[in-house]
Image (tube, rainbow, N blue to C red):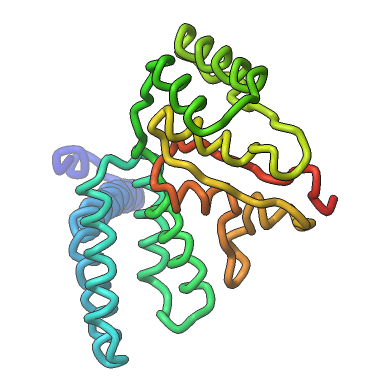
Length: 252
């Protein structure tokens, strides 16, 4: 390049060529600086996150609630790591936890998110009981618990026999109908005892709000899961015998 400049005898041409060369060097320098900045920002991302967390901890210390918040965070993470929750539930809880940690603990939004995390952790995702498929045992328990009702008990036995043969529960619903006191609820309890499953009863008489059964949107303050999810939480397993009682008395 120096040789090229020396060979240009015209001063104006030489100056123009020098300006072009300076512009080239400037562009190269700009690109190098951009690359350096990108690399630097990526390297500093972890450090930046650490600094922000330390600042957040300092602010919480000033507010006087750091111990509780940190213990809470640690407890949730330990629960996730020690139990075989599905991966999508773990990801969802960690995502909600990140949002929760970014908010002031006194805000309404924080209490909504905390409630949602509790529901996700308390709902049984992997806990289940193993069925006792001994039909002789089922027949014995049904006969011990109920006198007569031969057609009903025969129908229950048929259903459980098909369930055992197919190992499938595509339509696991039996409808009991009859006047009060004929043993509908106690039959459901006997089925649960015979199968060695947990038993959950939900009385729907007079219920006229679907949110009570299905649950509320989590954005509502004081939102709760529906009666079905609450029943599963109470039973602690994903496969209880679930009795929806008095469905004919639903408000609408």
